[in-house]
Length: 258
Ligand code: NAD
Image (cartoon, rainbow, N blue to C red; front, side, top):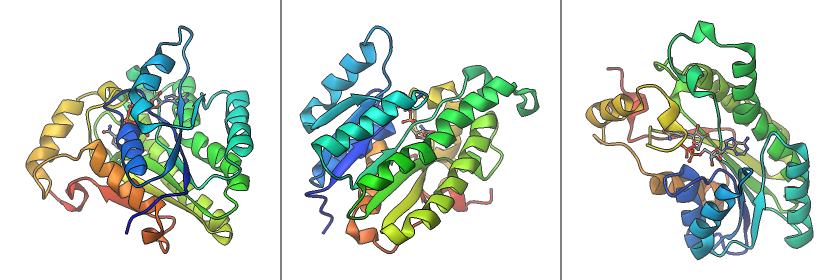
């Protein structure tokens, strides 16, 4: 039985009701987990209000601002978890960013700052959050991040985000090797294309989705709730022997040659 009762789960990356992290949070809640939610704060507090309203039905016991480019916010997030929860069991890393201009055209024209921004937010943040989570995962734990096929194949326009995802998948392996002796597992889900705020920045995303609908064995794309089900599995004891892996939740698209 998939049961996350008694588990404390920190979920990052909810921006709206299309977010993959929203699908994950719903399924972790359904499985009984106690949720902490972080959001990316903005100056006017719009994101805080929007995400707070969305997640209210899941009764999160923590709701915290956490911009991964802000070391103080990261520190404060994990201090709050330590003080209020005592231990952490699950970390969902479900965030990424690249400038829209860097997600179209020629990869060779990427600027140094565009490259650094994408890699800092989308790749470095996994090691950073995992390092902060590790001392709190005193009873073992599960860390899950989100990647995409563009990290292992050249997908038109995905460009710098493909490099970021390649680094992210390598990070999963290094973190899994480092954390394994503490019974902390680290895995990635490689989701098929889904229309979200982040994916709408990728040039030609609708064409990608239509292509998957035609070619994938299941002849469709996947939903955030399906990704959420796989995340719940990876966070549960049902997957106790799995670490360092990339699990494709993509309606089978990855296996196809043409
Ligand atoms: P989304 O826009 O709903 O989520 C992206 C999140 O990243 C947002 O909540 C945003 O606030 C957060 N974020 C951006 N910069 C941040 C920062 N500096 N600090 C903290 N948070 C920050 O889009 P999504 O598609 O749900 O993306 C979630 C993850 O899933 C990403 O890693 C994305 O690459 C991955 N993914 C998406 C798809 C897809 O097709 N949508 C496919 C595979 C993988």
